[in-house]
Structure formats: C-alpha cells, structure tokens
Length: 276
Image: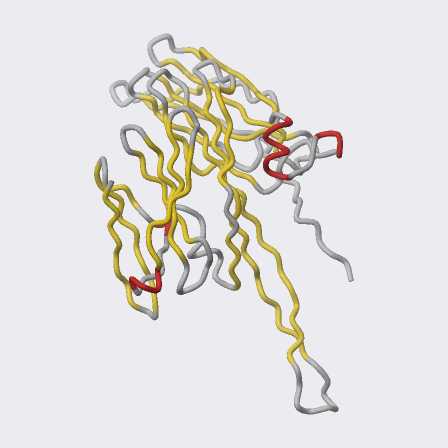
C-alpha cells in the first residue's frame, strides 16, 4: 500500500548557453553563473529593447525535490558580459498564499511549479509566469460478474493543473511583486489536454484564459492583471452554450488585441477568437 511521493529529484547537472555570431560564424559560450542547481528547466529570452539575453528559472537545493526560489540573469550584448545576476528565495507570504502553510511548518518551496512563460518589461526586468502541474495514478476496482475470477483493477492517470504564479522582477533581479492566480483543473487519461491557460498580452494588461473545469459545459474565464500586479477574474462564456471545448494551452496571440484558441469537441475542430 505504498504511496509514491509526488516529489521527484530533478537536479540538472549543468546548463550551457552558447551564442552564434552570424557575421563571423563564431560560436562562444556565455558564462552565466548557475551558482545553485536549476530546477527542471532553463528559460531564455532575447530582450531586443535593452540589448540583453535574459535567462531565468527556478533553483533548488542539492536534494532537488523543491524549488526554493527564482533566479534572473542578463547578458548585455554591447558590453559582452553578464550585467545582473540574482537568486531570490520565495517569500514566506508567497509560500503561505500557495500552500496555506507558514515557513515554520517546514515548508520552504514548491515541487510542482515550473516557469512556462516570461514577459519582458521595458525597463529590463521581466514577469516570470509559473504553473503548478503534476500527475498521479490510481487503481480503480472493476467489478467482475464471474465470482470465481474475482475483481480486476484499471489504472487511470490523473492530471492536475492548478495555480499560476506571476513574479515581476526588477532589472537587477530583485522581486517587484509576486501574485498567485487560483485555479484547480483535474482531468483523467488526457495528459491535461484541455487544462492550463492561454496568455495574451495587451498594451496595459496580461490576460490568462482558462477552463474553470474540464467538462463539456464548463465556464470559460480569464484573469486580467495590470503592471502593478492588481488582478481580477472575469467570466467570458459557457462552453456548452457555444458548443465548444477550448484547448487553452494551444492558443496563440495573432495581433495586439486578438487571441485564437482551438476547440476540440466530439471529434470536430473549430476556433474561437477573443478580441480585446
């Protein structure tokens, strides 16, 4: 009757970032300082406004079970050097908002969050967007109509796509603000196909569109967040009324105020366009 821990060791030995010069054909290594182990993956983005290459992610300890905080580093192309490097531990307030537990209860980080989006700020900082995702398996008893055979069991995979965490980072890597957008999406045997969110960026807002439940009559809602971290949740429409079932994670922003999200219901593909 052992229950496997959801926590898995995810320490990565090393990340190497190389830059290719198209004019000379040279390839050089950028010496980012990964002083602590990277948790799961590295997120890299080109900041063309400020002439930087930005790397960010979550870091962990030597055990590799939980993300202890985030890191943020910038490489300036003109100066040809790393100009900012900062590793910031999650604040007790942020940990409490996600888990409902304070740090005195031996809660020091998160095991299910991973960065999936990064929105660059004009001042050289960025907004790091992480989502809580994990999978479990359960064995369900299937009744048998033949008493001599006895019951059989079927294994189902359950996918959880929960809260979204937004961390706004200043150019030096320190935290400007951190917010948690609450949601809880649970589905079976679909790898979370209809879960997660679709991010769209308008001039003044970030919009996170998602299915409230993984159900053919679910409400489709969105979180709307401004540059100060203030946010509100808004109802958009009922999927059953529109005869759609959105796949938010496959949505794409197609203009400054339009986002296109595919729908897949009863083997029919359609598209939903949201205009701001």
